[in-house]
Length: 378
Image (tube, rainbow, N blue to C red; front, side, top):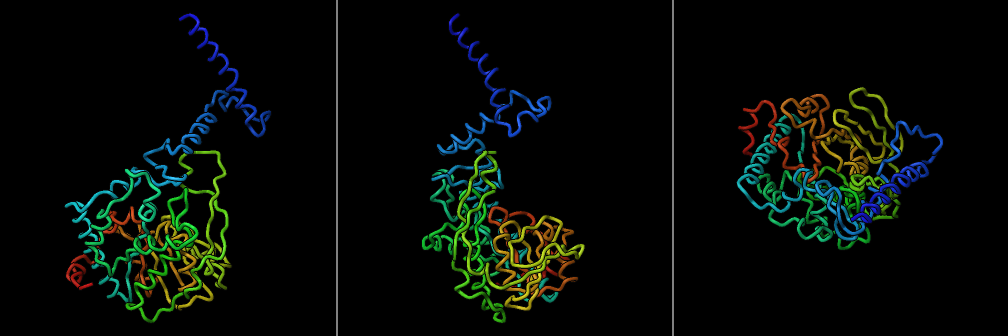
């Protein structure tokens, strides 16, 4: 026992010497570090090494946030909008009731928008990565049909809501590159383009006046490296994780955009047709030279609209980007923007895991008038 105690104390003593040494020499500028503000016994370096080793073994140190799949693929954990349990939950009284409630609200909005000059209202659901690539997930986490999304679409119908799951699942088998980033939640430009093409086909009959990008513009022309993926960031790994990002022909069409902060009307960017991120409460107006249609689109979207934004800009010469959370509340901006900006079309892009949110049960004003109209058939 005495020898074991001595060995333990020796190891502790060595650690007391080694840990500060590692922290000092791992700093880019050891002599300039203010060590009074930085602990010499910080163990982050060991945590990073452990996390990286477990990741390579398919084990997540943040299982509620990130699930490690096959070949290093990462997926959202169940802490994010119950994405895993919803994918495995079948038709229940709760999911059916929510789908019917959202369907009634969508019908009410469609009628209200039509009465206020909008020609078409459609909702595009961006599938969760695990929905399109279940084979890359651990067996216990794979979505099982019918699930909560199927219950939603049963309540909304297939006209107002565009289901892209089958299209993307079929397309992945014929593409050399994946449609979603390996360590990110989002689709890439190739996946977004396939989704946009399917969306266009779904509304061709309802909006025959519109022109759409040609078949050739959706083909991938090269692959570029991409880093900064959102799921890998949960692990706080000091790794330069880079994965291929396909570029499609549409992204190099001669479309020139000017981007405005909508509230202040100030210009925030000019030239080219870049991907557009938005923030809640800060709508962005994109005006395009060279777009196929001289039409206005009020686009209620989330981060799944980033890779889609070049396709929208190439198709419509004015697109107002607003987060759907800002639009669908009891005092949201949707009605205000329709009256003030007078869009030709209102489109919604929402990722699957948020598509059943209570935001989409919000009814338009005035409620009584919409409720009487929302029985119009699909």
